[in-house]
Amino acid sequence: MALNKKKVAVFVEMKYEDLELWYPALRLEEEGAEILYVGTKAGLVHESKHGYPAKTTHAIADLSVDDIDGIVVPGGFSPDYMRREPKFQQLIQKAVEAGKPVAAICHGPWMLCSAKVLQGRQATSFYSIRDDMENAGAHWVDQAVVVDGPLITSRTPKDLIPFTQAIVRALASA
Figure 1 (cartoon, rainbow, N blue to C red):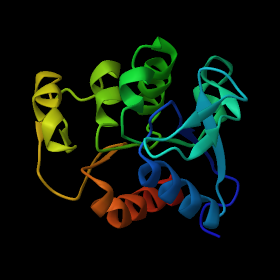
Figure 2: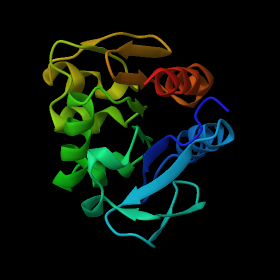
Figure 3: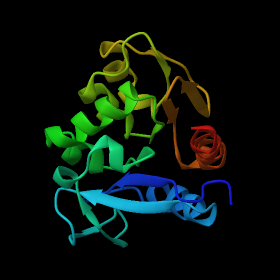
């Protein structure tokens, strides 16, 4: 298994996009990674946009960058809630500084804007947040997946296969 013993923080908050959380999480687990479902508190159950529950296993305040090998930020409405908690942004900043993969899809890159890690980097997202990303200093590109250093970004659920493949490659080589 390519990702044996790798620990990946998957951020969870209410109204996440189902596929953007579960597809990468399950594929990474299938590759041998340990998934940490991270929210504001451990043990909370958050419903997705479509009502599917996800239970957090870890509180963001209890994690340090040394505890993880990478981060996945799903989209939906959850990034709008997560970006209100500075500890999510701080963990993203520290992971990027450490060169650890940080992957965000659809509206997930809002977290990269708030964490101020996009300046001068190529990135993509759902088209409606392009202005936010460009205002945060990103060079926005309309393609399925964009990898720039430790950042991995993608547009929509239809891009989940190349997005998740890029995450697996980045974690395997980290």
